Amino acid sequence: MECRVLSIQSHVVRGYVGNKSASFPLQVLGFEVDSINSVQFSNHTGYAHWKGQVLTADELHVLYEGIKLNNVNHYDYVLTGYTRDTSFLEMVVDIVQELKRANPNLVYVCDPVLGDHGSMYVPQNLHPVYRNKVVPVADIITPNQFEAELLTGKNISTEKDAVEVMDLLHKMGPDTVVITSSDLPPRLGDRFLVSFGSKRILMPDGTRTTQRIRIEVPKVDAVFVGTGDLFAAMLLAWTHHYPTDLKTACEKTFSVMHHVIQRTISFAHEMAGPGRRPSPAQLELRMVQSKADIEDPAIVMEATIL
Image (cartoon, rainbow, N blue to C red):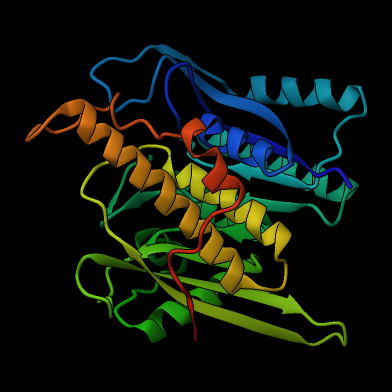
C-alpha cells in the first residue's frame, strides 16, 4: 500500500533544512513525498548571507486548491516544522482538518518550533496558535523541553514531571509525544542528553494503554541546522513501521540521527582542519552519504521503558 506524505516546510537551494532534510530520508524509506515549500531561500539563515522568498497563507491555499481540483488530495501523513507566521499556521490547520475529513486515519506529525533553552525564536503570537489550534489536531509532536513546558504551562525538573507533561500533551490531542531533549541529569554522565517518549495505544479489546520510554543521547559540540526536521521525518517513518512499539521506533529514529550527525561532524572537522571551528557550509548534514544508515540504522542507543 502506497504511503503519501504532504510536507509543508522550508526549502533551501544549498544544504539541508526543512523539506530538504525530510524528503530524501522519507523517500529512501519508501514514502511518496509531496512538498510545499513555506520559504525558498538560497541557504539556511545561519550563514552570513541568505536571499529568497516566503510563501504567504494565500499562496499556500492556492497550491492546495490546485491539488484539490485534480482530486489528488488524499494523504496518509502531513508533516510540518518551523513557521514564523500565524496566518500561515492557521491555514495549515485548515488544510489538515480538511484532509482528515477525507481520510480520518491521516496522521499529522508536527514539530512545534517555538524556541529552546528558555527563549522563543518565533514571534510570541504563535504560541497560542500552536497551543489552541495546532496541537489539538496533531497526532505526533516532537517538542523540546522548553516547547513542552510552554505548551502545557508546567515546568520539568524531574522524570515524573516529564511524564506528567507528556500526559497533559496527550490530553490536548496527540497520541504520540517525544520530548527530543531535556536538561534533566543523564544517568550515563554529562556528555549525554535525556529524551522522553510517550504513546497512547488503542488495544484490540478497546482499552487504552500508554507506552513510555526514556533514552539518553550523546551530546555533540556543534550547531547543526535541519536536525529537528530530520528527526520528525524519521519518527514519522519508524512509528509507521512500528505502530505499537514506541521503544523500537525511538531507538531507530535516534540511531539514524546519531549516524548522520557523526558522519557530518567527522567530515566538518576534516574540512576545517585542526583547531578550526567548522563553518555552516561544512556542517551541512551528510544526508546522501548516510543513505544506508537511514534505510537500516544500526541501533546504537537503547531506550528504557518507564
